[in-house]
Image (spheres, rainbow, N blue to C red):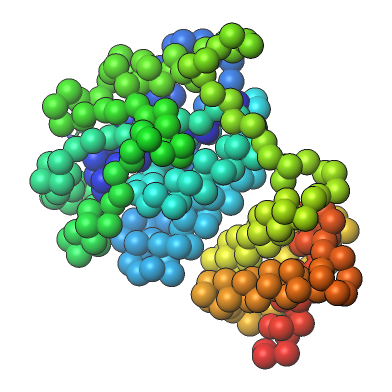
Length: 303
Ligand SMILES: Nc1ncnc2c1ncn2[C@@H]1O[C@H](COP(=O)(O)OP(=O)(O)OP(=O)(O)O)[C@@H](O)[C@H]1O
């Protein structure tokens, strides 16, 4: 039914806001179950997850895959993470669009110096906190949401330092109203994202085929990244993406940049063969099948 992206600087009150939103939804007798997806759902350590770019990308991949698997018309999914990268919020928005559900961003707007102080207090109390280098790096790279972007809209803003965070905070109240409002043909203020052709099982036109190819290959990459994180970098064999699809057997651990490069090459090759050779994949499953075969061939030979 909805995807809510919580966003804010490190240690800006995002988890408190997520919990308040869940409680406020319950009090509003919202029929849909609200569920929080966060880093602790994967038992990940804060500092390890942001220690370097591959670790951070891996974390984002895990969260995105979980959102992709869990978004549905029957529940409200709340992503409680930094979500500070504009391109990443765009990807989450795309997942909501593909599922045909509502979407909004809840932003905890706190000045860096207060976040820094809260983080230090957390550390002094012996609670899990960011180390200083990671904290400063995350603060520097944070891309503030802008309601003019489709993927940052509607935007509900909280000011935790000035006003605290309560179930009754104006931004939480507005988000709950938006999420629970009944829509009919006259409703203009609630936007239900419309799925594109990529979510349908019909044969694709050429342009949509490329879009579908992009999405299907990304799903394969996400599955590999997730499986590798569970295998702690060890070789992979027998990863299954569903019935009727070949299993992924890379024989060795593969880093994300290499997977991305293979994906780009595959998309290019598929585009070229469509001009003179076999037709491009006609649906998501055949795109996945072709990409998995390609990966098994490419990675198997270099194992
Ligand atoms: N309004 C507030 N007033 C005082 N302290 C606050 C306030 N909001 C949050 N804090 C402090 O900030 C700390 C972090 O809160 P919270 O875990 O909700 O932040 P977060 O943004 O989810 O952090 P992280 O980036 O680690 O996920 C809390 O331990 C709390 O002590």
